[in-house]
Image 1 (tube, rainbow, N blue to C red):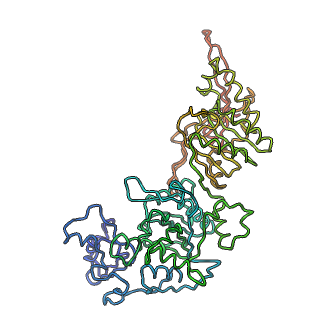
Image 2: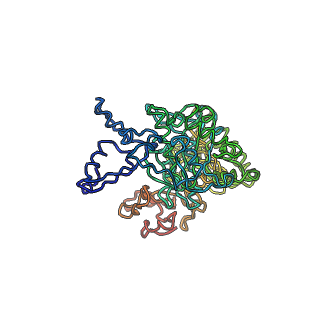
Image 3: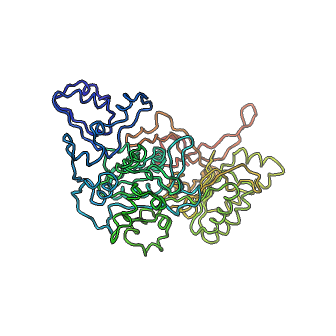
Length: 571
């Protein structure tokens, strides 16, 4: 009613209020006051209540009208009280989700009163609830399965949830199913949202959405991925969840789990460490989940260990059971980060990766100085093994390179570096004003960060750097596509000067930029890449002075961007 003045005017014979349990009482009273005859409130007190305003009156007679929901106001706090209340009609049959999810939420919140109208599925081949455990994905406080606190805040996040949720969401989206990724924490929702957006996996049909339980209350999806951010070390909201506990924090922990689980029509994935379930106190949300995973003779919650499936080679996946095989296919090719390197620990790992390369090496290193002489023998060995090598470096007009060429002490060494690189590589592309630092091995292992592989000073002389290895074929492909790698493999040669073209970046005139799509939050491209002849010719002016003029032959890297070049002669 705050959003629509026409609706707020009233009055009405009958007022129907959906999700009444999630509304603040003062707002609800305004809606109720618009009814002349009848008001019907629809809601579920076992799910999340109103979001509290930042400032709540401290006077008890006012505070109760803010903190209390409409059910509690009339004495309904439990399913039993709802059944016995003369003014409450309890709807006890659900058609959205199946009997196993019904069993789980009955244990957590509804006390056995809820029934499902849907049949039991084959739990071995098509389970309704799957627990994906994160134990073993990373050791120590900096592992990807460690829950991390937000400095100065109350939220928490972890890498493991974003990684697994993204893989599962992609799998089900490809099968034509809508996916909701639900988490208790706003910061975790933001991390996963950014991850999905960076990889272009949002704003598609069927939908893939990520948010907190509060955001998704009242929604439904084919598949729900419930990311609890519970690592078994730092207990969180779900670990404390207990609907029978009168305190707000445990009660809301149970409610938010209930909201997340009941959004799913077909399947619920729960992401958590088994250690968190093993340590859960009796009666809590995680204890109920644990007990259903241990049910004999057939577990009602099926468990999958992600650490045994992430990164598992295809030739080792043959012995998996049908559920494990399905999960392995969902995880196969997705990224897994394995360490965080500084300037000292990076080179042993990177050189070892180059030594083990079997198919391809892609290296972006803007500058190439002393360190390249350490890397070069490893590249020669890789070339002899038949590995394809593609190098991307800054152009020869770079000020650092020109400065070294101008100094007698460094000129000879600087002059022979680029020819040495061209001798070992299948492709060497010079890129003007480049700054990327990337190493991709066999289109599966990526190193990303701030360190120049071919130039960082050895012996502790360089600056503090970071490089992070990520393992995963799809992620590697995304990186290569982002860098236009395949389009860079055949630089054109200028017909006038015989020089190999270098890559340059130009700004698209604002009036020519593509329109922003309504289907995405991404901004349209603002720059385009062009092959340009680097040759310069000396010309003599009418007054006898000399200057150099660059060749104006150009070729757009992407054919659809050729129009930006106007009438420049082509390469």
